[in-house]
Image 1 (cartoon, helix red, strand yellow):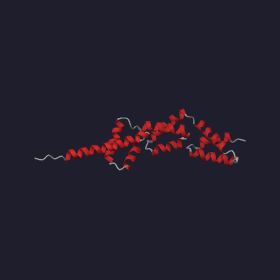
Image 2 (cartoon, rainbow, N blue to C red; image 1 turned 90 degrees about the vertical axis):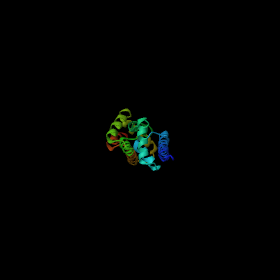
Image 3 (cartoon, rainbow, N blue to C red; image 1 turned 120 degrees about the vertical axis):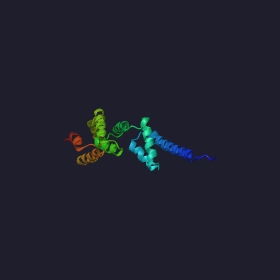
Length: 168
């Protein structure tokens, strides 16, 4: 009488593949928190099956190792503190990370209740003005406006501060 070991062997392979996916996911999360979509993309690029990836993501969600809302809040805080970016930049980046539109608006508005957009803009203007001291006033103004727009601030947010800083 022979015993068929194929189901046992198959199950052990299946478990080891899922362990590999979990290890890869944990390795990625060790460096920094990530959104579900970002983690899914990275694991797919590594060649893991979609089924294994989904099981791993579900498991990590159960353990609270993945939380898109917490990730988004942390991401926004870090970008504002480190780079002084504006809401347009943040919205664009959060959309790339797969955060839902309705959550983005709430998270950004909460962040700018703590960090004043006006103070960030003034800080950038003064810093750039000092760096561009040898340029003409109009040239300074244009370069600072472009810089602030690249940082993610709208013209409405920028214009009053520019006029205030460059009045003659």
